[in-house]
Amino acid sequence: MDLMNEFAWRGMLQDATPGARELLLREQVRGYVGFDPTADSLGVGNLVQVMTLLHFQRAGHKPIVLVGGATGLVGDPSGKSQERPLLSEDALAANIQGQRSQLERFLDFDPGPCAAELVNNRDWFKDFHVLGFLREVGKHISVNSMLAKDSVRRRIGGEEPVGMSFAEFSYSLIQAYDFYWLWKHRGVKLQLGGSDQWGNIVTGTELIRRKEGGEAHGLTTLLLTKADGTKFGKTEKGNLWLDAQRTSPYEFFQFWLSASDVDARSYARIFTVRSQEEIVALEAEQATAPERRSMQRAIADEVTARVHGSEGLHLARAATEILFGGGTLEQLRSLDEEQFVALFAGAGVPMADVPRADLAKGISLPELFSDRAKLLGSRSQVHALAKANALAVNFEKIGDAKASIGLERLLNDRYLLLQKGRRDYCLIRAV
Image (cartoon, rainbow, N blue to C red):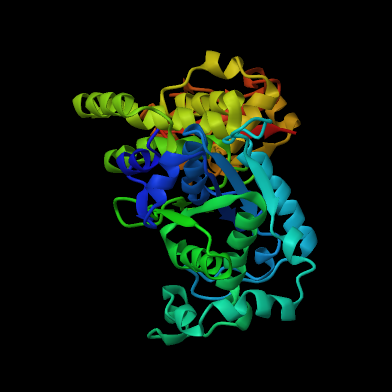
């Protein structure tokens, strides 16, 4: 596979050093991407680089994942307007373990010629003293070139300069030494990264050339933004995570499903492993019947299954169908309690507790929807919407505001799903 062509038609390729294509066509290449372990989970924003490594491995090359156990103690200033708080070594170790488990869903770490490897730059920096670093690294890189980096100029010479610590300023030297160490000890000849890492990558190739006269290359991918200009991977709740405890499979699935048609064209190329022919066919289907959102569904299915497994995809689909596709009482009854809670909690449906004794006596519809669930602001609104046939309990329309809701309606002997209109829900839990 011509990997450069693969990245190009997928719309991922930004820059590459002269000779990178020839290297990739000539031999099996060891290439690496660095990940900053500032959290115990990767975010959707990291997925571009994860997919870069996945395509790299599928092309027959050997991916190296570098986690910054050392650089994470400093903090990468690239793209940052201010310095981030530093983490303890224990926190970094926990974060690295969390990220490794997620990377294993994309990359093949099993023994073999293309097996992925994970390395931690803490291993070669822990005994590297400052005088040795200055002698081995600092003397080969000029301050002028470091000051010329966009990430530095914006921080110290922009319209509103905020300054930069020496720790951050030295980050590019530390990353350059990572590349040099991997080149010398692991035979790594290529560093991959986002376009904001180009300056750091080139510094690494320059260090290798100056110290050893060796061949090393860099390749960067485009920084992804949405068609409307907003930041990719961000939602109203903030960052979209790969960890199900931080972002539920339902929310994750909905992110891809709700993509615009323009964004979906990019996402299909970058985040799936479908061939060019398959993607062109999806685009044709989307153009013919855009209301079916077939491209968005294909992306959501593939990415959610990879990140959350078949069970996570099943729950995400079930929640989507139940909450947005006209759910039925039979569907609700088919869920056991664990699935029931996971589905509605994951979908962000609010929950209210009601004493079982009150339900045993029966609770009027106005009291239940207004006072207990807070779905409506007043009991008079409940009467009006019941008359308009706009209220439901467990997907059964309740047109009589005088109706009383009791224990006999509980699902799994514990829950009631209240619905106002098409999209507003509240889960009542009997306690």
